[in-house]
Length: 414
Image (tube, rainbow, N blue to C red; front, side, top):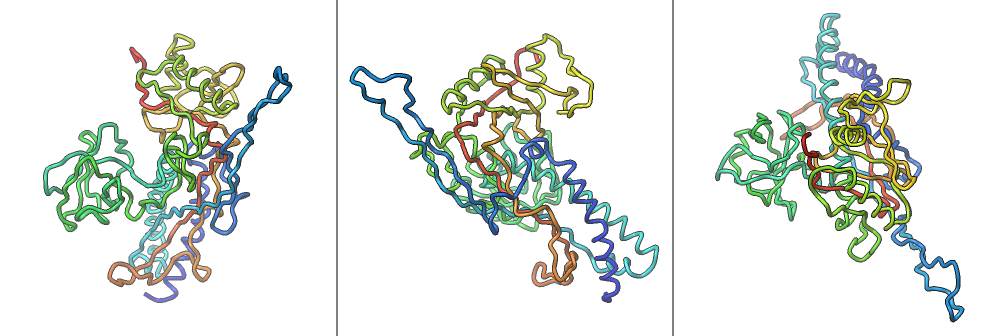
């Protein structure tokens, strides 16, 4: 393939790059938009911030009988430095298609059509991964395996697994959950079929058979311990995040509601109230799947009609415009996010949590070109690739102001 053809192909890709990134920014998950990614804490490829692990205490309205002041626990902060994670998506081009881009008007049209189809797929995958990682854990586990027949090409996942996270052609690693070590034949496997009804995926036969059980999980290929720190770890009372040991810091943990079962407004209000009493502050954002917003509205109005207002306000999804919950005078905006696990409701304080990023999403640039020629592929095979990359991290400065209700199921009669 001549240089002229390659130059024409990369020029066409460069022109389509801006609209692609704009589409991704327009269609990112609801919570991502509200947390507003910014870079004010980013230094190099790291994020520097102070995290509160103790609240000031010992405020008294009067002295004791002995005229001494009550003991105080001082406020305590830790200065933390956390590396940003790298998210990327790759488009690979074959030389015949690139050559067509520089040969004739018909060839260029064929290349543009091909490129549009590829960028749509890339856009959808990036949006899906942004949402998944925002609600996931830094370990990168996508789903937990269940027992399967010895020596098989299929993997069955645990009940409740969101099968939307799997598509044909994805590359996965199958790991022992406790250690992150790949099982036999568990590295870089390709999904050839997805069975949503039976919670199963089929793997490529070239990689060999696998034997899975409930002690194993799957990640995106190469993603173990390399993803963003998501809400699954941040809103926890046990997980260690940012290198701080939760068990040694009594307030360095979120409030986890102990009550599980059918959704009730009373149960959620009790969790939000308890969390506020523990931390001294209240959340101002509730995040859940759409169904719990609907059940909340039904519980306070007695009607399943959700189109409660029509006007120039932000549409929060699921057929209605705006929902707020009030607890002891504290207003909490409620949004639904399709990436939120189906059995969880989160309470977040927006000033205490946010997304820091190294810079806006962009194609990797090599020598003023975003299409890299002859990048080494498998076994040194020459390939041409375009790599869309992003370096984000979710940062929580005050963890005990957040809460979660786990194990939530639909209310009776829903």
